[in-house]
Image (cartoon, rainbow, N blue to C red; front, side, top):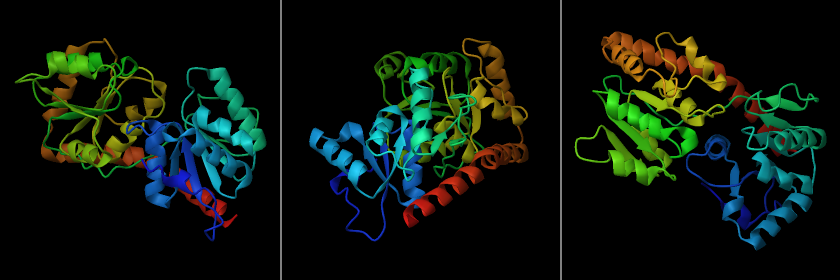
Length: 327
């Protein structure tokens, strides 16, 4: 994650203001982190992770927000508080999830919409029917250059190894029920050591890769056919979007934010602690499709996610960033 933005906050040295994304952390798999990395890749925006800054650097950042001419995009609550230093219509706040304190999230959303006039929510269930028309619901999109392997039976999960992601259930399902294919689990977290102790042994059909760079995720995912997550608490997952954009078949939980997957015929949505024998049988049906049907399913997955998310997301940010840079 590029955190160079704090080294020189003033825009006086450049002919136009810089666009700087401000977020809390620089985790490889966080939704906000992937969001800003996609923006950096496409539009050359900069990124500042508050968690990585010293006290002096945070003061310097605060001063530039209050008195400088750069444009700031604040991601989620902790970053959004910096937006109150200079409530200007040039800055933007992006709310990625309801968070632990829904009422606080909704209050910050309303205040920033009133002051900045520009707030982006990635899902409408964060603040249903906000009392202002300055809140835009813009569903996520991200691409990672993944190319699904039609002849593979492997699956990939990339995200945090945490209880909220139900990774213990996922690993147990794959170990106990899947007779073909390897599950690649990428990411770090509190449960990684426990998972490795239980499932990392010779002959296991699960491989743990730990935390890896984003380009390595692309390499491993391109050796797979499925993306899977048993997470029971998700907004619109960037991991899911990136996987489907690469044609990976989604095996994800039946959540409101993931209902669009139902548009794809033959794709099972997961019920955590459900009928895993039936789920494994449904996956095996997909594995036995002839080559032309596999290719058609891959293309349908890719088209579904691009038609729903990509065009609007790209269009909104392209126009917004161009206008911001013009001042």
